[in-house]
Image 1 (cartoon, rainbow, N blue to C red):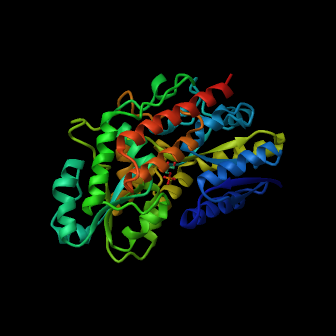
Image 2 (cartoon, rainbow, N blue to C red; image 1 turned 135 degrees about the vertical axis):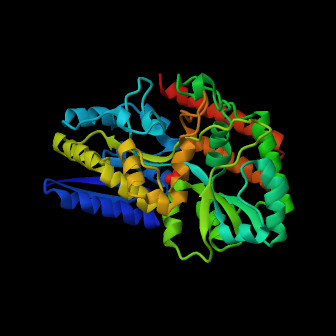
Image 3 (cartoon, rainbow, N blue to C red; image 1 turned 60 degrees about the vertical axis):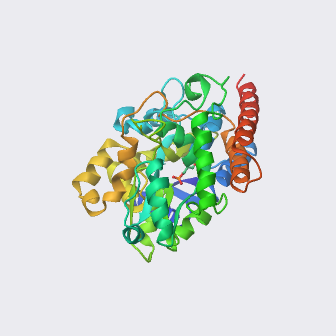
Length: 412
Ligand SMILES: O=P(O)(O)OC[C@H](O)CO
């Protein structure tokens, strides 16, 4: 039996599902055994993986989140492109089996898939059904509706209207995609590494000015950069609407919440666009780390083959809320009546399937994890009144461009 390891960042209910998939794989055959190891947050898992690679102790499979993708894809020799791994080990692979939104996010500039899409999500709006009923409103489609109708009514009914769990992901990266606005030069970073960020623009500055006003009016609360810090007040029924990941659906469903919840698409600014576009995938993918022998690589390929089967993908989607990454798994979910039973479970994939544009496929920027740190620091300073929106975005632009220039140098 060949043993392989899988480092991941899936805690709580997600971790239970990861363990279940690993056990099912191990039980499905007797040649290979995979051991999943929880390594903490996405950031901690990436840091641990890079350190392990430098020490020659890397796992066979490493989960890398969206923000770390450019860095890992750019680290030549650190991973085996998944498309090569599968072909070398006789596993059928057709990129067109994957839904359009996930096909090229973890691919190189030639369209070769480098990372195996695994947990693909998108940010959506969850809401407390009874809170909205009490306030006599429905979930807003636009931010204009939010600030003029929904939030004042919810405040009157005794609720903070909104919280969110990831300002860079939801209010920055997907803000640009939802409004089809360019986020970086070079085709949002996909066409080269001499890229500059385009985050210092009027639309997002107006958005953050509005968010600060909402906070000052008691319509919005920011509980810090921690994901759970912002989700918990929603679960407790204090905050009526919460922007989180479609991958939070399963965890919320398994909790005994004191209200019914549902979900809808991420609002947009009608003043910015009358034709809102799709968001792009978040979450993470699995990379096959280089430096292992042929038998272990064969085991990794077998595991990826198992993982991407329609049955396993549908199980993962149903349990967690991460979107089905293959057309076959999506069809299986529909045929099984999953969305008849839980309509909110389809919101993520529906939002990913809205009309797209030139700027809706995400971004490719190296050292982006550090760029998010700069954003989080500056956004926190905006919300606590320590800096102005204007100064914060100038700082983010300058520091991000310095990081991008440093990354470009590492790429030769
Ligand atoms: O919470 P997830 O897994 O949907 O990931 C959200 C973001 O994409 C993380 O960068």
